Image (cartoon, rainbow, N blue to C red; front, side):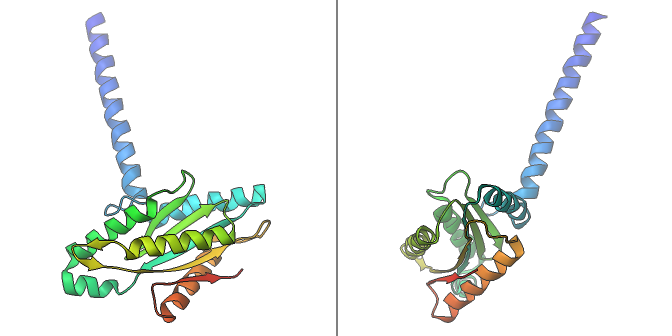
Length: 190
């Protein structure tokens, strides 16, 4: 009788472990971009809401960067989609290098990425954006040189904002950077 109980308990523990692993895998699949390993758009939206609420409670600031690879279609058309994938993977590495634990880095779609950086002021956000732009400009992936354009917006202490509004503003600044010749940083004002 005791052996049967031990066997059932062991089988139950194994099944429970298997379910836990499956649950973790499903969560990863639902929240992580499979190509870059970054947050996906859906999970960025969830986590960015937390940043917005924390900033409001603490009366602190944060920045939202919209980043786009310049002439990415030409990379795919000229070098193929595998080369384009390598570019996106390498860009993800540059964007995550040196980020703080509470910074959010996500692939927003296609060749567009979004960063949400809590507790940062406008001057430091602009300096960081320029560093990222220059770092990307210095890399070469399979002899492919890339550049990025960045649009950013920085909140002010006590500002009541929503994520959709911030994304629209940073996206508008991104298009300003592209219209000004690409490989630039543009700041949107709240």
